[in-house]
Image (tube, rainbow, N blue to C red; front, side, top):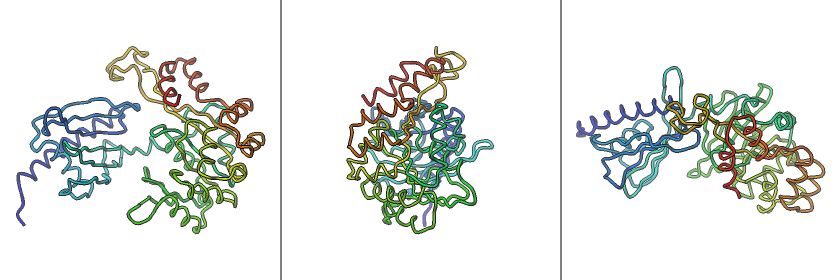
Length: 377
């Protein structure tokens, strides 16, 4: 087989560049790296963007690299055991990477576009995904409520919110809190973001028929006590999750809903009978991520915060206890607003109130809370 020495040299040069960019991203606290073709110029130009504190930022534009973005994409494919010759369909993979004394996994996604292949790298930092529950940002009242339900032997607990709001971090931190050698814990995830010792994790693989629903059914035959389902996407998974909780399992999962009350409505929209929801659902946690004011410049903008005025993020949460009055509302198919009203009367701190508490402490701004929560108005 004839070896193209020039191509190998281009890929080696490109990989050196990629490694330096990954290192820079880690040092800046980025969660994602984007390598994009600049269609306004040419395929030889590469735009690099980092997602930092939830916001995508332009970092640099690369020109003059032999092979351009093709070489970058090819080098990343090789490092993540993909088919480097395939350019017409998307591919996914993983890369193990070390920065200093930190071991990281990079989740790789390559997407063909009309201007060239776009590469996205998700930086999987176990320290970011697994935190103490006390450090997530829950109010004292919400944390006490949440702890009381995750210590129970059965029930369904749902973590809700849009993509990127920290649901996986809450789930992983919870499993880490309740894990013991006396408990059998299984998960079905898409994808497995971080690997745990002592927890049996399964990844969704639609190509081989492994879905959340089929994975959950298999887990139910594995003598597990605690089950984490990455996301409830369909009625079958929802129904099976609720029935599993009814017969003695402790189930954790997520839904994409805007607040606690609408989570119940979403289950009903999936065709789940109200009696089953009221009997098995024990707790709902709705959450968002908000940016914190930079400690050094106090919001004015400086080099440390990349002149954004913000540095790092924290969660805001509302934790709903499915009390007897709320169960009665579920049976009556009450509106989400009525359910939320009763929950507040019983002491639930809403997302807005949790955000306002941060503003009053000088940790974030009213504009930031509005930005995060206004999307659902």
